[in-house]
Length: 174
Figure 1 (cartoon, rainbow, N blue to C red):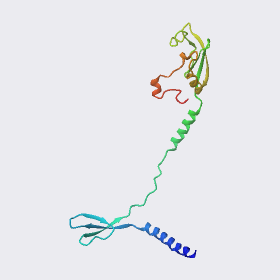
Figure 2: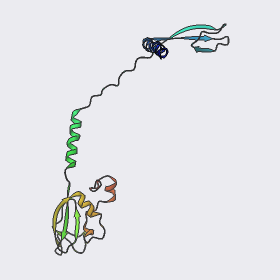
Figure 3: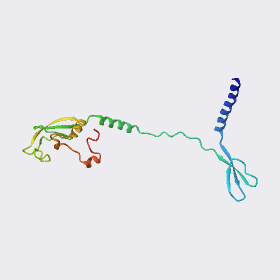
Figure 4: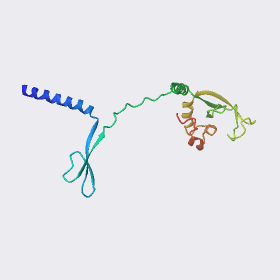
C-alpha cells in the first residue's frame, strides 16, 4: 500500500504543476517549412533536411470573458405583472332568456326585446318578446354557446370565422 501512495503523490504534483504551467503559456512555437517545390507546411516538429525553416510564434487565444449582464427595465416586468392580474379577473358575458323560454348567450349584453320570426329582425319590433339578462362568467357562456339543440340558439352571439382567424374570438381562451 505504501508503494501506491508514494507513486500517487508525485503523479498528483505533476498534474497540478502541468495545470499551473499550462495556464501561464502565452505563445506556441510552430515551424514553417518550404520544400524544393515551394510547398508550404506548418508543423510542430523541425523541418526535414533540405527544407527552408522559419520559426513562427502563435499568440495564445484570449481568455474567455464572462457573458455580459444586459440591462432590463423593471417597468416592463411590472407592467407585465399588472397586465396578468387584469386578465386574471373574471370576464363576464350574459345569459339571455325570453318569456317563451328560449335561452341564448351574448358577450356585450342582452337586447330588451327580440323578434319572434326572424332573429336578425329589428330588436324593437312590436311583435317581439321581452328578454331577461343575467351576468355569468365568460367561461360558462362559451360552454353554453357550444351546446347544440338548445331552444334560442339562433339568437346566440356567434363570432364569424374571419374574426376567429384574426384572434378576435371572445371564447378562444375558454
